[in-house]
Length: 208
Image (cartoon, rainbow, N blue to C red; front, side):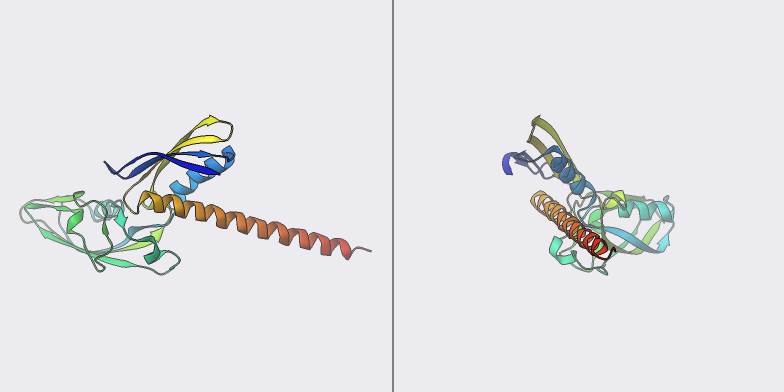
């Protein structure tokens, strides 16, 4: 397998284009699917709304919060089942609350983009809430989707990939972690095949 970076950039989001060669189309498709749906990232899952007389219902406000990409170093939360980080959002109109107004309990874990509008408050309207971000994967819910990926096939075992991060993590980490997920799946499958083969032999040896 060979990877050659063709082009990369950081606007409007961080992205990379690379050539992948020496692998079958099944591997290329597996990499694309894992990048999209099986790399864990943080997203707001639980919201405790203390005050809200804005134009948005509580449920809509919570939905908007859940779709804000949360940036964190992967090693902070990977492999930690009960990991949670809290955010506080508070404001009174007239003003617009943005993602930058979410105050995290950990200053290293913040919204990936500061200028995402959450809700516009008119005079007399107020919002106060607490929210918690937890790890998840894209196949559970779109809010945990870490990025976008697609490829085109150049010849039998050569592909041109485009991958972009939604801001939760650097695009290189996104690809690295996706490759690790594929490796773990392959190891689990190999272990399962060996176990089934052993059981088949034991069963055959006990036959009269």
